[in-house]
Amino acid sequence: MTTVITYGTYDVMHYGHIRLLERAKELGDYLIVGVTADDFDKTRGKINVQQSLMERIENVRATGLADKIIVEEYEGQKIDDIHRYNVDIFTVGSDWKGHFDYLKEYCKVVYLDRTQGISSTEIRSENSSLKLGLVGEISIVDKFYKESQYVNGLEIAGICTQNESIFEKYKDTIFVTTEYSTLLEKCDAVYIVSHPTKHYEQIKEALNNNIHVLCESPIALTEKQCRELFSIANAKNLTLMDSIKTAYATAFARLLLILKGGVIGKILSIDATCTSLADLDDEKVMKNKWNSITDWGPTALLPVFRILGTKWKDVKISSLMLDKFNDFDLFSRISFEYENAIATLKVGVGVKSEGELIISGTQGYIYVPAPWWKTDYFEIRYEDQSKNRRYFYQLDGEGIRYELVAFLKSIKQQNTYKYISEDISFNISRIMEEFSENKSIICNG
Ligand code: CTP
Image (cartoon, rainbow, N blue to C red):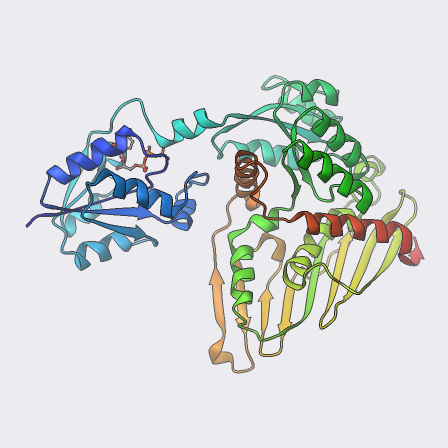
């Protein structure tokens, strides 16, 4: 008996896939098809696969061509599989020509001609080509522009900015304007990273023009405004999403899942610090700078709200203010009291500190080293160090590309797919409000 094995993603199944499987089957008597798991695909750069692993397995099963279906989960698995299943022939499409020659040591390798004129990438792009506008004055606009290239089904329709250098940089490449309403005419969706004081008005205008919104958190500076914006979005079936990159990092998502398994016992405390430097003497830059609570607050609040929930009993915000720029907190400490836990967050712009995250429990703690908001690594630590565990997950593009994929998915699934719940968005805005109304000012510099 000749055993043949082939691997693929098999997203939005098309006749190129079917022809490949037919020919693979003809090479032998028994065909094994390896379907790549979502995480493994991410590491290969396929980040917006549209169908889930189960659906993709079902696509292959439905062809009736596979005698066995397996899941490909890790680097190096192909060699293991060849040994395990006594494989005689490994085959894939000619787009991979040469790439798998190293397997010749273990079995015969056959590259089959790829069917011209069709691919999952093309189908995904046709299904949803979203025109995204970028709005804002800071360099993250640049990062979003670059990261959008990794996400198919999305094109950048233009940029609205008051920042001259961003304007100059892009004016010969794409549509750039200083008029927000002009950009809205060209878009289905916008990513907003303008100053937080502008968010509410800009989001409202976009939603009223039936445009989906991804906004760098906080969405609004009061809870009432935030609720109003979500009620407009929901009534119109539009996606409104807080943009916090950390929420989309695989390691952060895994950390939350692992915690749910009770690995550190009862969670009693969360400590998180986020800081960045700023040139406090540069008046021009500082005019557009986000203060510490808006710049870092939402990111620092994310693990607290995701792990301890949003039913906190009390919050106290203490700030060192820098009065020469309007309402600018150089450093703020946010202290939460929950029924059975506490949390302390420190955020700062124009100051540098150790940016770590520590989640303490009755049996052990989780340690995420600086900069924890770009999580790719964390440890579970115990008193008995031999039980410690380390976890690493690749993070590409600071999470931006995953965030764009999540935004697209939410739009496609009509707003039912959410990483950051509305409740968390309301609470983030509520903390922004607490800051302006109830902060205890430690000093005015
Ligand atoms: N394949 C093929 N002809 C095509 C498309 C794919 O022969 N037109 C083959 C690939 O070479 C691979 C298998 O089908 O052996 C599974 O491919 P997969 O990566 O799942 O599909 P693509 O359409 O190439 O996906 P993408 O556009 O995301 O790269």
